[in-house]
Length: 449
Image (cartoon, rainbow, N blue to C red; front, side, top):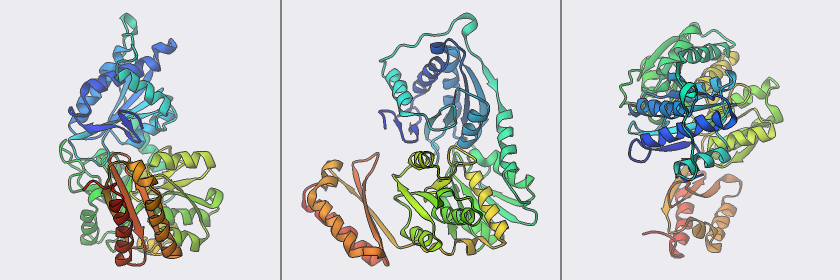
């Protein structure tokens, strides 16, 4: 991670951490880097979510791009995965998404995508940061070289058509609930499900610039649970602010997490001979119960660091076809280069309809182990993590748990915090072993009291 950009873009409170001047300069650099630097005109596509500050950042980015001679194609309110898709299929030099994902409305972010629709490489990100810090000069365009904006709502419509084409079944007679989080999916998700014949029930589809993710969407799925049960729906799907993740609710009102989704569709792929390498990619935060279910089904798995970026890198390096996170950020490499909540919903519908079984039955084999996770504020993350006594305490817990649980101790990527997590057969056992490790961290003087 760099000074400004983390694993998922440059994110912070609008006009406090992430300033409109930052957006202008990012546009300035990208317009030059992909255009005038190479003696050509850059073509860059931009999308945004529904938060109020997204409009400000959209115009600021366009200003910077045009000033450097690039043409800015504006998709308006759309999803992160739609920008990734259109960047790739319409041969844009790069894509920009304005969103802070599942964060509250006053935060925002700028996500950069390369010409393949993938998250921007670290080398280019570092060059952007050097320009933000005034270490690089970028000339302005003049005369005929000044860029323009192009309304590109047609790109969003093409993406909707693509989503519809992914379904192998009609949804006629199926009652589907959608919580679009007052975010990017509000103008897209219903169009897809209606076109496929579902009887679609939508909630939180009146964005006002301030209500994105507020008590709704995948971070507040309890509302969709009540909605599905109250309306006697067959299934429900909840998206986050930029719709790159999806969680599900079965017909009984139970939550179907990203781990369940990886199991359901991983097994479906295996049964149809489509699970490349017989492997599903997870992160270290997936529940122990998922791995037990995989082992029973004869499915191999890999674990990466937390972050869809690392999941995607593993998939590309090894040729795996499905991977994701417990949060519902699922990647199907045949269809996309990033997590796509609506694609995830369409693929889950495919598995449900192909098997002719309710979602509750498909998810049942994944029995979650109780989990306790505690954050420990420390003076130095490396010192605490590498302390021999702390490592010995972790090893002792791992040995005591054996095959009946696991312990994970990892550093936060953004805070001076060590996260201690244990999964085991009961909450009492989890608490006991988490506290056992924390006691050692405290006794060695690493903890900030």
